[in-house]
Amino acid sequence: MNRQLHHKQGERSIPVHLLSGFLGSGKTTLLNRVIDYYRMADVKAAVVMNEIGEVNLDGQVIGGDVPMAEMLSGCICCSMSGDLAIELKKLVDDHRPEVILIEATGAANPMEIIDAVTETSMYERIELRSVVTVVDGPELLARSRRGGRTFKLMQEQIRCATDLVVNKSDRLEAEELIEVQQLVRELNAYAPLTVTTRCEMDLSPFDADGGEPASRSHDGHICGASCAHEHPKGDKAGLDALANTAEKAAHVHDEACGHDHGACAHGHGDSSDGHVHVSHAHVMALTHYLDAPVDSHAFEAFVKGLPDNVYRAKGIVTLKETGSRFLFQFAYRELELMRITPQGDVKDVAVFIGEHFDKQAVLAGLAQV
Ligand SMILES: Nc1nc2c(ncn2[C@@H]2O[C@H](COP(=O)(O)OP(=O)(O)OP(=O)(O)O)[C@@H](O)[C@H]2O)c(=O)[nH]1
Image 1 (cartoon, rainbow, N blue to C red):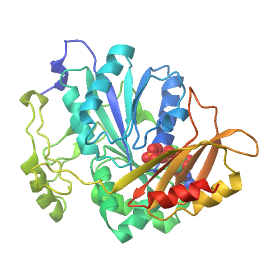
Image 2: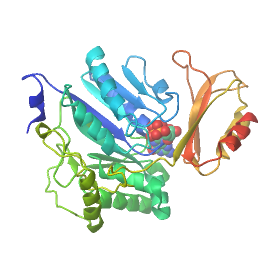
Image 3: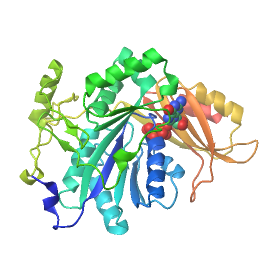
Image 4: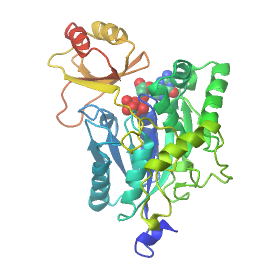
């Protein structure tokens, strides 16, 4: 059934694009490009930013002209999915945007967010148009060799995409790039796939008035307009079993919505409580406010020496040498500094994200810079 019928005849739904992808894969880089694209086309966009840490650092690089809802200190895919509905409604009521972009935390399972957005679309004039998953090419390759929970989460994010962006191709050899594409294709054979460096790509999938609503087919695959294909059931043996597990926990949605939830053929974690959910509780964040400028060399050495299980760090620091302020980004052992003039009253801060790392050791290291 046409979901637009939930709303007054003739009233257009606001397209929502969800940006998914693991921590540091390039979601904010893509978000910036898309916002610029909308600016040039004079399309009024609004953004929902979600960060695991207590501060919205990514929001610092987005211009102040874009209405933004911030959801901090948690992950919208679980504890905050109710809040997402409220934030979406508020954005629509207060700003009447023509398009909404949601950047999920890199630890988010897109399925839960997809559910929250589609639920909201039943009473608000919004419509999930695409789920764009940015894949960190080198990281996916490395994780595929090691396995583990983080690799599982990355697989979820790939499976649920309507559009796939294999990013950081500059850090892959030609044969590695082929391997990454094969890996991605095994997980999601349907979504259009673009290989990028710094998410440089054709942005027409984000056109505000183009495309069909993203919808979930019977086999759980979510597809958009560009997805003109048959959806074979159980294209991988293991997926059937996982889909069955998901089915058990499916809360069948209001009939009018035209689809039942939980039928997505993707692997989840525990389902002991009957609620199937991939566990990313192993991902933890440390937010620390800095009360003094840092020495640039000592800071660089500290960040580069962070333990391997801290796989993402970002923040704002003031450099002792010049007194200027920088946004720092550390993803997969690469550090980048960008000079900024923070908007509003923003303190110097460092956020570290990783798996079971020793917070005290990180703080002790930071105290030395
Ligand atoms: N080498 C390389 N670095 C990239 C590329 N794309 C993004 N980066 C860098 O990777 C880091 C993380 O990029 P972001 O766009 O902030 O990633 P994100 O997915 O928003 O990160 P989280 O919000 O922490 O999940 C930044 O330092 C980017 O400049 C790329 O194609 N190649």
